[in-house]
Amino acid sequence: MRTLDHDRASRGRRLWVTEIAVATAMLLGLAAVLAGTDEARAAAGSTAAGTERVAGSSRAGGDVPRPRVRAARVDRRRIILGARHGVAFRFELAGKRTRKVLVKVVRVGSRKVHKRFRLGRVAAGKRHRIEWSGRTRRHGWIPRGKYAFRVFADGRRAKLGARSGPIRFRFYKNRFPILGGHGYGDGLGAGRGHQGQDLFARCGRPVVAARAGRVQVRRYQSAAGYYVVVDGRGTGQDYVYMHMSRRGRPPQGARVHAGERIGTVNDTGRATGCHLHFELWTKPGWYEGGRAKSPTRALRRWDGWS
Image 1 (cartoon, rainbow, N blue to C red):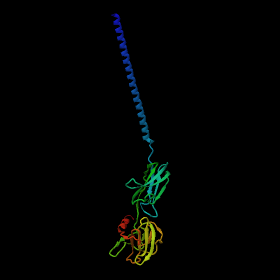
Image 2 (cartoon, helix red, strand yellow):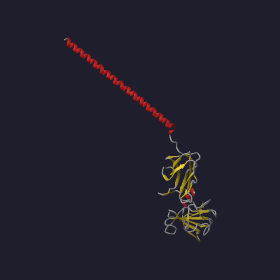
Image 3 (cartoon, one colour):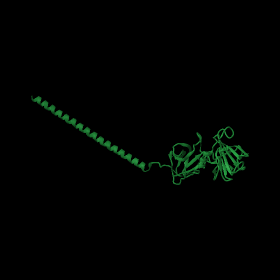
Image 4 (tube, one colour):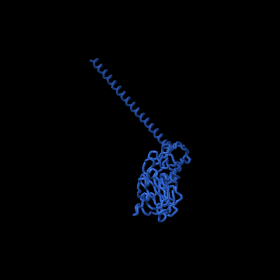
């Protein structure tokens, strides 16, 4: 019995020692895990702090500044299709860097780009000039409306400086045919088979081409006096100018620009008072199968922006 009790006591002590060893190992393992977690947290905190320091440093002065234009302006606020001169845009980059420059022409009120000028590397502090007629390769001519130039340097839109002037312009396809004061007389019909619109003005006022084109006819006729017929470029329509002075008319076959002087207001032919008789003929043209249509509304519209 004594041996049996001794064996039981011995097994009990061994079991107790084993349990203590297991518990101690578990405690040591938990402590190691906790220590590792604290180290990970410390490392994460250190990384976050480093990231904040880098970000702070970037915000403090690492960002590339937005490019600026010291001065920019257009020389004309309005251009006419087919005029001798288009719109010229001048600009100068600020700073000292040479940048890759792209100039866009966009329609005001939309994001549509109608023309791009890729200028390559452009030096700062130097004036650059772009001239444009409003013509595009894809669509022929831009639609009537308001447009603006925008400068992009190194892929970013440049900010305009305080010395910049207007950078917008308007594009139109016709202009009014008389320079100076004028008034409206009889229109189409007028109870006497009148085929155009009478525009009264003082004798000697310049008459200019309402649309670019080619002089199709240059003659004298007892009723029309000295007159010119211009085949409107790109329209198929003919523009007719009557009762002008003998001198100052371009030769037959000549090309004329919109706004170019083609005569002078007078009272030649069967005319009462100095005035320009203006006609507008549909395709295919003046006495070539076309017909005279009323030009009055078009003239008043051109008058509004000329």
